[in-house]
Image (cartoon, rainbow, N blue to C red; front, top):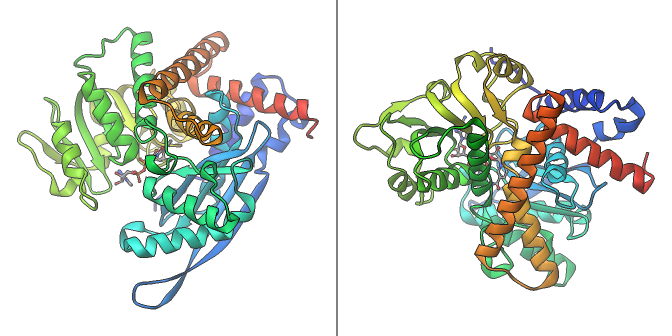
Length: 418
Ligand code: NAD
């Protein structure tokens, strides 16, 4: 039977470890163990065949101590409250690590978006936003894309929210299409951040970038942008996968051809082939001999059951929560470095912050400007995490949590919150 992992418990256990190292009493951080607000909404939608179906939606605000809640909206058939709570908490920590003035939130709908027409998806999105409208807003809680959602969905969100308010509210959501207040560079931002994190850790490890092997799980927004950027830096991507399985070529896959294939909506890797590439399962992909492994699909992929099979030198987490606590311990014992999600995939929220600032100012920046500011944020966050982890002799994940928890607790104290 498949073991169930509770990602919120995963979050709590790492946070408690960090609290212990910081010498905190329970009173100092107990409030951070609980999301500030959890909302569940029913989302009725008229389907194309005339039937009304009701979908379940969630929005969780973990913390608003450092600013408005911030975090994506996920459309996936496995969405549940524990997952959304964990994702929201990770956002509070991520925003603190990358030093953007936000708390953390997350939302989701239990739905397989590939089974809905465009019209049904739009109506579902509008129904969900109507449900959560009382608790979101540019200064309250600012959603963004996540698994199963994209810039188009964000475009519908901005319209629905603005319609409900009777005024244009571009800053209510980030990751929007550029003509409706989106930022240059946002679509590639998470992948670009993963790229900066990968470069930074390789430099620390004394491994050259060019020709270094990379394996990527997940070919969605994060996986494809990461693959494109790493291939542009002449890294050798030897395996990639999606929900249909993976492809492996020890001489390096043809990334531009794969990206071209996947650019057609609805196409997956199962209909792609290239000479010299063989099909592998996701389990085989995670056990591939490689220097860098980038899980960029979903949480709980590297667990106590398969961590011993991982043959990478370093794991750079593109996804949120891909490594369980048990797996972390096994990897640490085996000397496999893990650059944690709350640091390595923070490029998305960093540029979301830039998008929101541009919306509030009604003044827009160039892509070069955005990318330079992103690089700055990622590299300074990486250095801070690297140095505290070495100073305290802890993993990079624990180091990242130390920085974040300290900032959140400090903000709560300064505001006089219990
Ligand atoms: P997406 O929906 O664009 O892509 C998800 C990919 O994972 C798809 O290729 C899908 O086929 C694949 N996948 C699903 N189940 C799989 C499985 N069991 N094995 C292998 N592949 C599987 O989502 P995304 O936006 O790229 O997000 C991916 C991860 O990155 C998530 O954990 C998300 O929370 C995290 N993340 C996303 C962003 C962002 O800006 N989009 C930012 C930070 C973190």
